[in-house]
Structure formats: C-alpha cells, structure tokens
Image 1 (cartoon, rainbow, N blue to C red):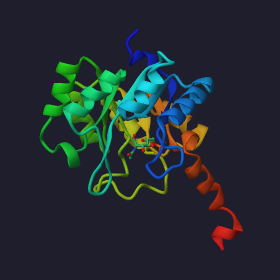
Image 2 (cartoon, helix red, strand yellow; image 1 turned 45 degrees about the horizontal axis):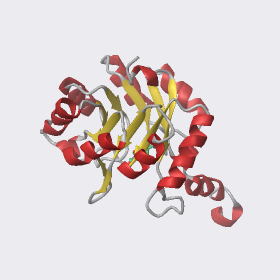
Image 3 (cartoon, rainbow, N blue to C red; image 1 turned 60 degrees about the horizontal axis):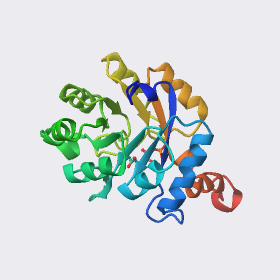
Length: 225
Ligand SMILES: CC(=O)N[C@H](C=O)[C@@H](O)[C@H](O)[C@H](O)COP(=O)(O)O
C-alpha cells in the first residue's frame, strides 16, 4: 500500500508547537505524537528534521514533514530543495511544500526537483483552487487546503471556519485532497469527508494547549467583559 493510500479516510494529527510555546521541544512533540497515535491518528504532520527524527524513532506511521521558515508576513512551508532533502533524511515520507502563487510565482522547479530527485511523495499546501490545479498538473501526490485564509488574496479567514468549499472544488477536479486548516470540531471532519477529502489534518485543536486554553478563556467574563 502506498503511503498516500495509508492516509485514506483517516485523521492526521499535526504535532507542531509555535515558537513561543513552552512545549517547543522535540522530546515533547514526540510525546504529543505518541498520544495522537493512541487516539487514532493514521499519520502525523511534523515540523523540522529534529522533531521528525525523534518521532521516526518509535513509529512507522506516515510522517508528513515540513520545514517552516519565517517569511515577511507568515511562515513559509519548506521553501528550498535543501530543506526538503533534510526532511527526507530525517525520516519523512511525504514533504509538504508551500505551493501558493505568493511563494512559487510561475516557477515549479522546486516541486519538480523534489519529485524527481528525492523519491518522496509531495503534499502541495495551497490557498486556492487554481494553485491546487497547477500543483496537481506538475505531478504532486496530494493537495492540502492548508494555506486557505493565509495568503493576502484569501485573507481574512472566514470567521475561523475551515475552507470546506475548497475541498469540494479540488475534488470536483479529481484532485486528491487533504483538508487542513482551522478544523476545530469533530463534526467539521465529517463535513470535509463528505466534500471528498482523502484525509483531514487537525493541529492546534489537539496539540496546542495554549490555543485551546485561549479559546476557553475567551468565553469567560474576565476576558469578554
Ligand atoms: C498556516 C500554517 O502555517 N499552517 C501550519 C502548517 O503546517 C500549521 O501551523 C497549522 O497548525 C496546520 O496547518 C494545522 O492547522 P490547524 O492548527 O488550524 O488545525
């Protein structure tokens, strides 16, 4: 079974701690990954070679690797060939690459090189239907809705809701799609699968206690007064 087949119909848990989080450590992300697997994750999405190596040491489940680089306005996901190579070396099976127009422009060289020279699968993280179609035509293995709501031309994200319409639109073009970004409730996963998602990634709602506490605190009189 291919690594992409292994994702089918499953929950992928993104184990990433933001830079300012007290949980920002490879050892802690590994424990987070272990917990996610116990909870039923079929795969993991992991930032940095260090975290990937730590997690690869105890699981054979597929790892979607990315290397976040702080850009001018937002994080860019694996912007160079060398960074992608480092992720494969650390044990990632699928490499997530920022395939937005904002970052790639008209150049698909990075996607082509990773595909032909590294022998790994590619998940193209996009923000629009056009970007997904372009990346798919270059030959990526799967397209993620990860960056919808984060590029200047898709801002602002619609009230913190996931972009299920983009899942539907990509699927209607026969593109294999991973739903990702702002999935906060289990019912939203059902919506994504109904829209044709191959798998769904959940990050902050499971693995970022700071974000979880913030959501609860925002509904207390102390913070809403
Ligand atoms: C935009 C961006 O840089 N997204 C990153 C991509 O890897 C992560 O910070 C997100 O946590 C991930 O996409 C999962 O999304 P959510 O945490 O909303 O479930």
